[in-house]
Length: 223
Image 1 (cartoon, rainbow, N blue to C red):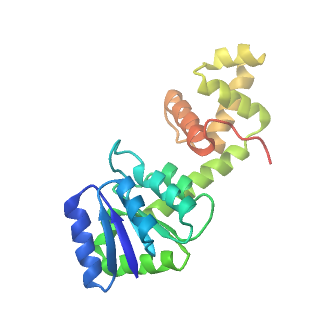
Image 2: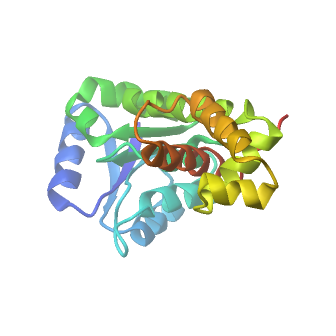
């Protein structure tokens, strides 16, 4: 198997290359920046590219952006993104199209060379490889999204008003509802989204966050 590595940490990058070479994997290119690894790939495409999520210049999601570019320019090249943190938003974006040949693992997992090699082989074979911690987060993400679909049209309207910071009284005026009716709708939203019993202000924040994280800021309508 032929692999290329992009990681701004020379210690991590070279250490990973040594581990892979010792395991019989040919590391054909290394780079500290996305553009340099893209240039290497254009000249000599590997089977899989290993990308750090955070690289220059912004140290935010360069690995994700580079993975998307590789997928577009070199669809036959597998991509494995390594991250220190399990970011569900990035996982959804990276894996959302359901195409194979892609992986998203936490850097802690790289310590087990056997698991890493197994993941690289599966990615090279066109399969998906996802860290178990990220899988757990994706399942939670999906449950939240499904819960939003269980809301009625009126409950969605109330949630939209909550997201704009309105109190129950303000929602009642805005939607031309009785205060008690709004209270019932808010309570129903909390129940359907499985919000913990605590101060209403905290639950209002959690409800709005569930909306934002699961739907990109748009409350979904019933299918």
